[in-house]
Length: 77
Image (cartoon, rainbow, N blue to C red):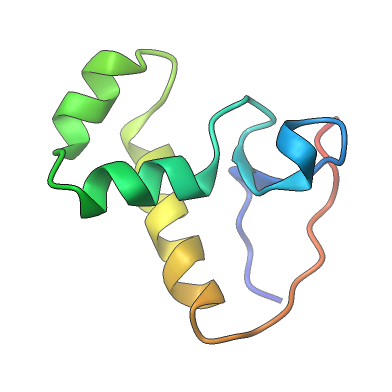
């Protein structure tokens, strides 16, 4: 299994979608923003509780998932 320490999945948070560190910020939101032309710096300015590594790991996770591999992540504590 690939280690995505900053990505969590919990059915009680955003319907179980992959999120950043148990927060209500989904990987899909981050990927959509970057795909829409936003810079990492702009995202971090809008979401000051995110860290650069959160965004980078969300992008790595999305790329990995695009390879159609299934992974069970531990629930956020």
